Length: 351
Image (cartoon, rainbow, N blue to C red; front, side, top):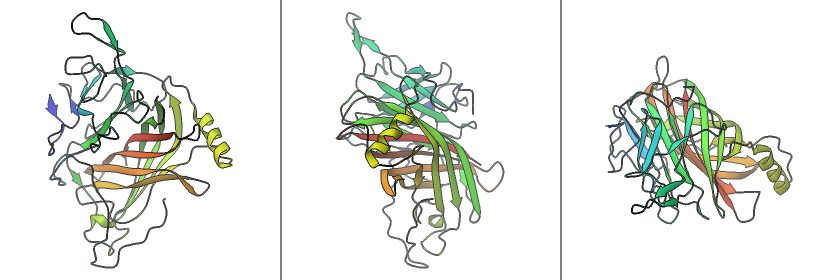
């Protein structure tokens, strides 16, 4: 197996098998106004924090990032993530009762008919044999969402489970497998697909979400308001046309919208748009982006969280580069009492 890019933290990024250049056979390839920095030459006071992963990133190397380990929340437990193109299977370590490696079965392709064809969904085996008498042992509900660009230069994976009353144990990783060349001025727009797994704190079960992803960058938007050219970049992101599905692939978007309207006294006809909060200091010279994500209902924030992304390729010339990232937002579920829903989505966009 070939490692897709360097790992500086001792935990493996996504790896792919012998057919490492292949993608899954899937059939397809503004926020609020923000206060700028203090003035020219003055660094901004930012809480920008990248997820763990590559320790010494640079524009000339591959970069991977993973969900930070949180024992209490169950975050960051999925590790040694591997996609095998030869038989279209998915492996992951670090999870309980998932029937998976090192000696178990692979996650097999799931076809709920809900997510965009550019991404692939996998589900853990239903049972695993007792190692002495082969009696079947039931396994937890685990799902893995994997996306890779047509070029193979960027990819992401998300693993979640619906088997716990709390969020349970899972993780995510995203990476670029090559280098990046960034503009120093001008604006660019990128578009592509978004796919997500939704889990819950307060009840079990999983849902999926899909949508259209748009990322716009102004490469000199906040120039003169922070130190370094890249930190001046203004990044605007939207997840449009979001839909929600159950694990059988049934569209439950309208039920969710009705619950929001009943709870908030609103008259929504579509899901609130997820967006990036605009402000300086969200980008660096290595092509990494991170900031806040949110949506609103009737002017009030509804789901909040963060986005994490990395740019890949030459963004100064055609075809214009790619961006891969993960968005994690959570908020109260209007369909229940004292239930929080978390949406962990991945996206790949290009010019």
